[in-house]
Length: 239
Image (cartoon, rainbow, N blue to C red; front, side, top):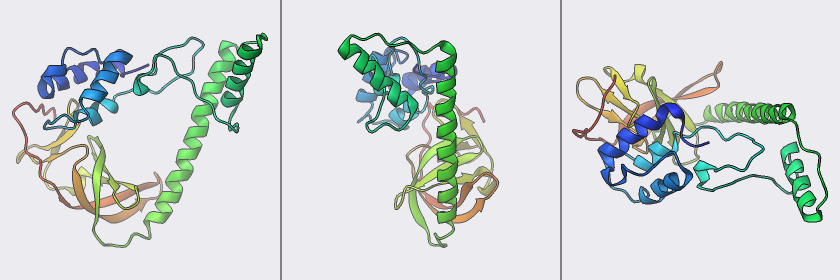
């Protein structure tokens, strides 16, 4: 469905501050979003504008009527696989055969579509849980040598780092950093309340393996060093 409703104002503020030439583009439309993704690819700005915008999308949902898929910039979208892996794949195949052979197909009810949507969510959560367990188990073999990576996600409590060597993601908590940090919901930056030190998306860092939170299946890293980011005059710190 596109941008999350609670993020639209933030995106507008982001563009006005860091990409004013694109401030008038309608980020809520599939056409406008596609334009932003294209024109921010090589944009030189203090913050990674494209990466920030691409993380503001709502989850795609199943529906009976064709509708834009904002993240992919398409006016209509569906998905299926061959060979079949799940019921939604099978149903799309049946729809295609029905159209090709001009043979009526009994439509799903709203209740069945809701049940299918929930089943897909459950399957995705199960797959994510298994993947987190396997990654957590593997992380224990990393040793204590420093590893390079980039910041892949920021939250008020800290940031996640994706390792360059294997794509493994781990969390660096603000509690383990010196001083206090505020989170800027517009730029998705963590900014030190006193010295202005910044952590932001796509920032190169170096970390070491700390531990695994077995309850949450979360890998934790310790920050070794980070490429310094200078704070500009347009930054908004709501910390």
